[in-house]
Each structure stands twice: as C-alpha cells, then as structure tokens.
Amino acid sequence: MPTGTPSATTSATPSGAARDAGPDAAADVRELRRFNRFYTNLIGALDYGRHLYTPFTLTEARVLYEVANHPRVDAADLRASLSLDAGYLSRLLGRFEDRELITRGKSEQDPRRQRITLTEGGREAAGLLEERSQDAAGSLLERLPAADRARLADSMRTIRALLGKGAEQGDGDRAPEVALRTSGPGDLGWMVERNAALYAAEYGFDLSYEALVARIVAEYAEQFDPRWDRTWIAELGGERVGAVMCVRDGRPKVARLRLLLVEPGARGHGVGRQLVDSCVEFARDAGYDEMVLWTNSVLGAARGIYQRAGFELVAESAHHSFGQDLVGQDWRLAL
Image (cartoon, rainbow, N blue to C red; front, side):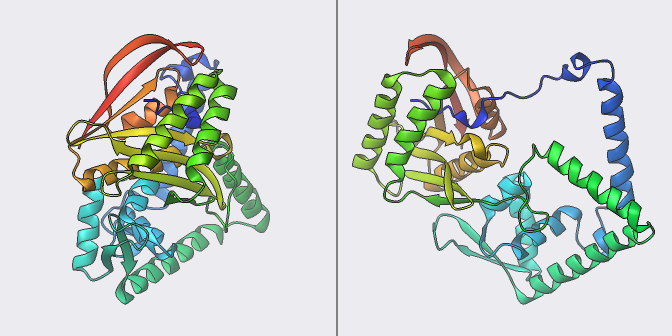
C-alpha cells in the first residue's frame, strides 16, 4: 500500500553536482572543507576525551544538553535529533545511568518509549558544561572589536540560514521543535484529506488515490489493536505537519509502514525521519520480526529516508495507478 510521502519531493544532490555546478564549485567545496578543519580545531571538537575540560566527549555533552533543555525527552527523540546509532546511544545512556546522571523509565504518553530524566548530578554536569561552553565562546569573541564581532555574528547567521535550508529559528539559536504524538479524534480524517490534496497537487494523482487512502484509514480504525498498530502525528508550532502508520501486514510477525506524510512547509526539519524512526522502534518493541512498505520511485527523498532507516529495496515493477504511469517499489527492514 502507498507509503510514499510528499515530505521529500527533492532527491539528494548527486555526487557529481559540484563538478556540474560551474567552474567555481570545486573551489567552493575546498573552502568549505578548509573552514571545517579550521573551526573544529579552534573549538577543540576533535579532543573527544576532554570536551571543555570535562570528563565528557562532545557527543555525551550534546546528549546532556538535549536532555537538560527539553522538559520531556525520549530515547527515540535523542536518536533522531542527533542522528545517533541506536546501539551507540543505548550504551551511552547506560554509562550515564551507571554514573547516576540520568534515570530511564516508561514514557507517560507511550509506555513503549523510554523517557530520559536528569538526576541532580546530571543537572549539575549539564550546568557545568553550559557554563564552560559560554566561557569558551566568550573567550573567542572577546579578542575581537565590536564591529568585527557583529560581522562574525552576521556571517554565522548566514551560514545557518543557507545550510539549514532557511529554517526559522526559535528560542535563541534553536530551530522550532518537532513534537510527535499518537493519533486522536480527527487525525485520521486529516490524514485522508492531506494525502489526497498533496499527492494531487505534487504528483497529479486522481480521485482513486483518495479512495485508496480512505480505505486504508478505515481498515486501520476498524481493526485497531494497540499492541500491534500505531499512528503518529507530527506537530510543529502546535500545528499538524506529518503522520505515519504502523499496521499488521497480515503475515505473522510482519509490520507494514503506511501513509508517511509531511506538509511542504515543514520539510527540512527532520519530520519524516523522526516519524519513520518512531514507527520502526515501535515495531521492534512490539515484537515484529520485519517491517515492509510499498512506495513509488517518484518519491526520491522519501526513499532516502527509508534507506537511512535501514530499509532495502527488494522488488519493483511498473504500473498505471491514480491516473499516472508509475514504478512501484517494495522495501523491507529486518528488525
């Protein structure tokens, strides 16, 4: 069934793009890499053993920062927002727990998810890291005249805007947060409406696609079993911007990912990735052995999300559906 999403209508840039973009592209790439080497050395990012003269690595410091600056944090949220391997993050959190920096327990919203909370010692460690980070940044800036500091700040804002795809920044230097929740009244109807409208606008799908989505949603509602089925709604700024479903495939121990959707205005915030990660984690925790999905080749960046989550393409075939000539694809992930 369809899982492709308008969340990703732009495919990844080909590896040869720098060569095709013009005569200055290669020089621009070299300059970016030169800046990266300079800045990571300047702030000591490669000194993994003693970030900011503390016993924490840079990654550990980032995890502590995320937990300290969000009132409710789940392990899945950390993995998605920091792009960390699940096994690596689990070991890191285990070390934090051994050092009595955090506690882990069931999420209030979803008992299948793992809520991370700082202990008093964890708050002290996060506070020390924040203080030293502020001091380190201040020491870099204090040597500059006011005019040069203003130029530097403007340049850094420009870098964030260009490389962050122009995402609006919230509370200081943080981008607006994506919040995931399970579905409630009215959400399933919204999924039918938005799937139909976006696929029609972006891919020319006809009314038969809306009919198919409506059948999928109706079947989900009629046969819903909380042990095996789950729908997530993504919100940005309190507005619904995305959704995905995990449902029983019909074969024993096989889950199916369905109806991944991200609104155009929310693209670039990692919404699709977080939705898929949550879907996979739920399926794994529920006891499924594998997860499958069906999509179409026109959804290039959506396929990139699936690939990053570990899905593998197992079959594809041409078909005429929804008023279009398409190439359907079957993807599989061993859990």
